[in-house]
Image (tube, rainbow, N blue to C red; front, side, top):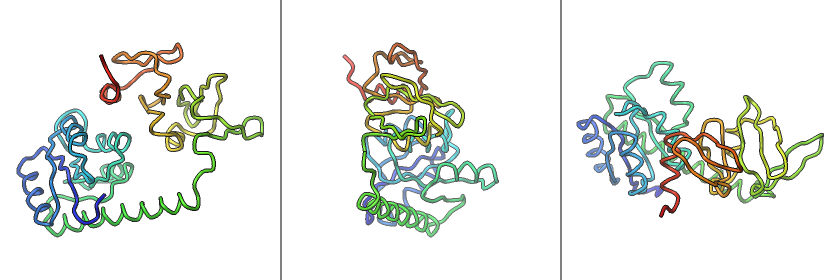
Length: 246
């Protein structure tokens, strides 16, 4: 994220509010790279315009709301975003907390609110970057392409490339390698954070796969190592955009 002049995407289905946001953001010295009314428009603009900050309304057109879209953005793009909402009930607050936004705006808002929200997002981003640099310099992993799993009291190394897919099993995860199946006491989400984004993809709430091991693709499942693994609709669309099709 450029910390002086931001490229901001607005996801808002009320055009009057979207236009107000656009005017205020530009007056604050930032660029608005697009306005999306729903999930599909937002994903297209993210791919095309490469924003470094998204103002994301919770209530948008379509079956997918802003919180679900934020989850998808986190998985695919690791984008910074500010949540925009007109509701601050407990349920909404809990949903917002779960997606860890860089800030939030409560309607009705004014120029000061938007300016402070953007500034908070920039500070949070800078703080994360500083911490990431420290981790890289002093606390990085020794084996970046491997996991160590405790088997019968011994920590055994499993190379990422040898993992075919992973399957959630409550608070455990089944890891399927070329030679064996390993049950580990860790959630799929925890393992997702430890594996390479370029090699692995979470294609379903219960499955993560090694992309190099894909043998075939259908609209509702992936063929991998002789097994049909379910794939979500959004993940299927994402996968098609990432492969070469003749």
